[in-house]
Length: 313
Image (cartoon, rainbow, N blue to C red; front, side):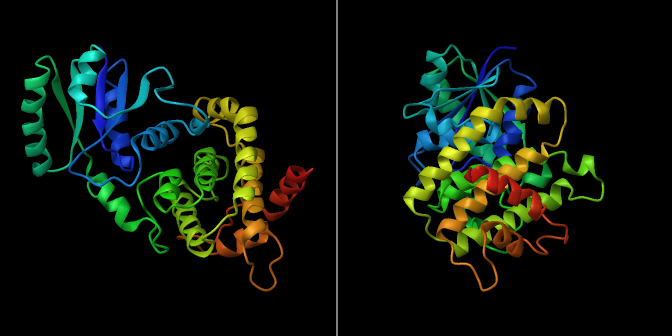
């Protein structure tokens, strides 16, 4: 089938939005994801920033902040931002199908009215509605804005990059957390006694919120150097990791140790450590004890310390 456009404010992009996109990709050859402006909403993030968050959420193995939209994400997704009307964007790109997600009857009423508004502008544009699954009914942008940064919340419903930007924190730390999570997808497959996907997500979320609460400021010099580390990591490992994880279902342990080491370096420069803790690696482990529903460590201290020493060479 032909292309479609999936447009919204996406402030921020949530796991609910990702479900709608994944469902649309099962039907359409290409989906244009358009970060649009909704005059009725006060947005936290600018449209171009939202476009980068969306591209990163789909594929975190590329540094989208070094590129300008529109973004070609894989073979079937185009992500961009739009200040004008979505109906006009569809007409300009010869798209006749608009994808929308529905969570409630109130959503249906709003989409029903929007359909006729779009018809007045572009009569060729038809709406395809995708129903939200029950486990994501609560996962709206409003929910994310309400719970982001709360140290006791185990499930926020948005990628860590989006959370970093919403908290006005360090974006690159969000990138590191997202990379660690996606690279750990098959950790439980390698060792069934290890953290499963849900345990890991909860632990990472609680650790991230704890760090953002404790370390309010990262100096610009450290942020720049950390960004260079992450940029270098993606250039050397990004494409390979994508294939290893998504195609071969591997668990890239050494690369994950490097990501933890980069994070430890970033924190070590600006954090005030409690008595008895002398490194960023030890600090991360001390904060991650007994997070979520398990006492299994997020990483092995010796392995990450080795990666950290290699990082500083």
